[in-house]
Length: 171
Image 1 (tube, rainbow, N blue to C red):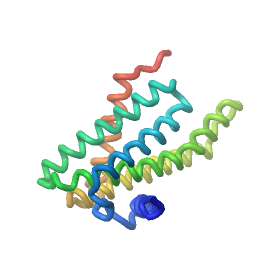
Image 2: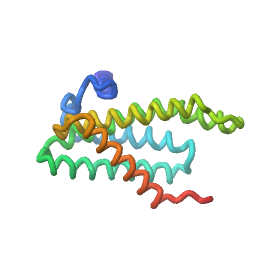
Image 3: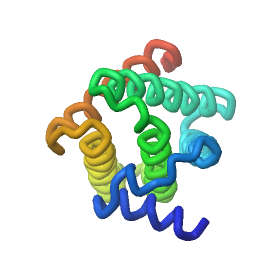
């Protein structure tokens, strides 16, 4: 387990690639479970429990579909398990890093401040997340890193719009 976390961390640091993760459906399901748990915990800061879980489940499902389509278009369907495991495994670690930043931001705003430092940290984390996702897609799809980052940005826009449409915020 410790070695697996190290592998996901190495992916987050761009020192490893999805092909360094074992191609195990059981591992993919375990990583998905961790992703759902960490993502739901993160979303609880701003959403009801069922809504938080539904939003993270939507993200995980759309991520699986987008990744499957991309890998099939590039004729690399056998890379799906490792790619998806790398995406949700590294995403879990990034969610855990995001948790104290989110809580700090909410606390600062609740105290009447703007939370400038936490906003900056959130933006850094967002960029880091896009680069990590782009890095994973670069290796999985055999494309340049900038193209992988563009795919990551497109995915982010897609999931934000789907979430906005399916989970409207009451004003």
